[in-house]
Length: 565
Image (cartoon, rainbow, N blue to C red; front, side, top):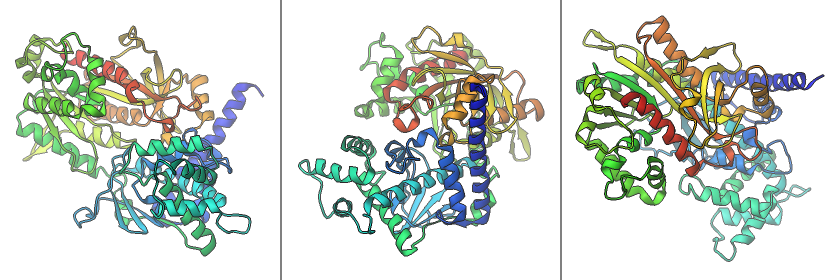
């Protein structure tokens, strides 16, 4: 059997494992409840171990607790979840209004509620992609918790001395000081099956998001404690789904409310008739690109390049400068629509006409005559999550019904800037897609992309051009599947979670429903947050940091030049 056949066989085995995971997860949502260590949970656990996703590293190694994966997951789940026996996924059901404190993870915008010492409720408003993401992370946690249990007990089932020491630290009976911290790392490293240096590094990573997690000592203790209780006392953990959540999945409840809120603002401000340029991006790059220099002339010279200014503003110590740019922008043509519809997607609206009164000094070259004639309006929507991309963009592109009248928006362009995993390059490099292929289906979406590779060359970054894979979940991708897509005739350049969903909404509204003109300009460009084919370069290895500034602002600049230049 040659290499291609072997690779295809491995990819098929992995693909089967993913399908099994998703079928079982969907079944469990309909069923309403399951216990992770009973038969239903075992199916998910075995499929995840068989798949062995890159993001979960050494999950399949029974001797080592996977630290990078553990930090990654803890930052995306609510503080205190490791201590909870009962975890319930809910829809928007009034818990915030009932006075419960809202807990928001540091790396994933979702509302969570600690009901009591044993119960955590997680609000799901982004559809199936979010459910699959949460269940996959929880399954990983339970697998690692069982390793901790085994390391914490001796052959007679009695707790080892290091576990007793860890218990005192986690419960606050032993205070950590500079003098005893290294000893504490040594205790913890025994429980984790890792070196003291690896343990210290993981602890320090969680310190950076202190306040939104419990710290590694507490996380490890409570994961192990609950696993020990379950094994010895039949003190089962349980995951359940509210009936309201099962009822609302697949319906565009949150996306419709969100889109209508935007359209109501446009109508109220008499902006709905203007040419609208939609950009899916973060909440800082367009604002900074347009307003940083006019707002901060006293802090930067005219010669300071945009990338340098953006890098300065991204530093934690420069919060006052960031606030200054935001305040200036809101006083000069930018409106910020806070998110209170359940999507967790903020929106900025920029009136280009307001730029004309700010002088000549911009980081982005603008064509003043073009702006005066066309009066472009820029609508920036924060990143969607998986299938939520279809729900939000589909609703935004629909006509708006107001007092019996159907009002169609004048959509002039749609630009998608996002982070993606790259398969031919490294962190910070760029990808220009020619098509999106939806993983696990025959669905494929060729794109008439107004961007090309040549638009981004000559800036010191590697640029790849070709098809991209829209995956069901980044946490479920393994080396075999990704290598197959990269090296087979697909010649895929990267993977992300939203592209096919965005394009599905665009094609439906343009080619079938006729709500958007066929002349709408489409622009897709991604920058690499990780390379899942390279050991140590997955999303679990840490954030991009300042490496992401250059590609983010290069793509932003190119988008704005197309709209305003």
